[in-house]
Image (cartoon, rainbow, N blue to C red; front, side):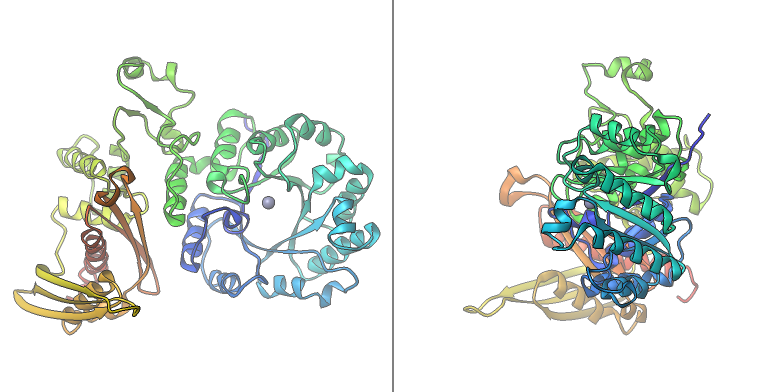
Length: 527
Ligand SMILES: [Zn+2]
């Protein structure tokens, strides 16, 4: 029997963005927030509203969007020394972000109070209590991050405890013990938690960093010791060696303990969420990641693949499908029949064993072997299904295009292009001049079609990402291109793969137009 519910707090969009090579656009952040919400994560930390305009804009945008489960959280710090909370610009920014939940971080380690903040331990206590009291008076749910809690506790346990008791008195909704330097060992976590009067404090949570490779174990141990809230990021990305990894902690809680989380009922989406975040960050997914990695349930033929086909339970700690992953024998096969049936269901009832489903699975496998990836390109996958079940109309047929790039001296190079295509039986031509070939092709398609298809005006490409698939082949490498497009109401992603980067881009670009045309122009009967 599962008894206690653990709250899950995601900081992919704040602490996660401190990680090396991690960067998201505003659009990415909004899409990611929705994906996290669909996963039933309880809290989504959106960022630090003071730090730059992108963060503020994020809060402005999400205010008008609907989230099914998650609460969006703005992040800031306690008031500065010698100031009133109501007059502190940092606290004001949290109010301006207009989230129902705010997280404030304050210092717990005296050395930091004295040497970094240049203030006294007692003023630091006031900084916590004023900030919490003020934010509570403004009707906020207040989560308090106790920075360097474990190091602070080892240095002066009484002071650290006093700060927790004060937070409880001021009405904080959760007290988060942070291992900011990531140096705490699992045995220390257990010892320290056992010495805290958890039942007398506001709900306690933890935030671990992975500098010793122990962030996940420390988080799990904390849950076993009675904390009720865990923080982390998808894929464990974050500052330095990263944060606790929700893709590890959450399935462990759901599958290996007596505790539960709201995410437990959505675990099947975990693998695809992990890959989605990888694609958005343009970081190659870690194949060896527990639970969600491509290798997590893969078996090489000749070793124990035979045993697997007979008795999977003997060779795997869980069934990978529980977390949306799949058993792989020899070659990767990303999507199984059930995924396909699920995706096809919007076009009718297809049984798992129908010929149509089997054929599509074969097509998908060969596409994936070639280098396509549909986890973060649902729109291209939708087109693949449509083509397969004859629910597809092409926006145009290409006759030919011609591109020419030129560069003179130090001036930025330009590309001129012409395109000839057939639309509704008519031959048309378009032209464009852009800085690069993709931009030029985009311009030329619009130039040709806009008079006949005004919807193109609404569509814009907002992101373009390229990944080299086989770097060992150097300049003859295959590339995978992802394109994200928007009509300012919705966004969709498409993919193209080729040895030729222009060809791969072309494919993703045409899919983007085709997807919109098939789903929102033709379906609306406007054509
Ligand atoms: Zn952190």
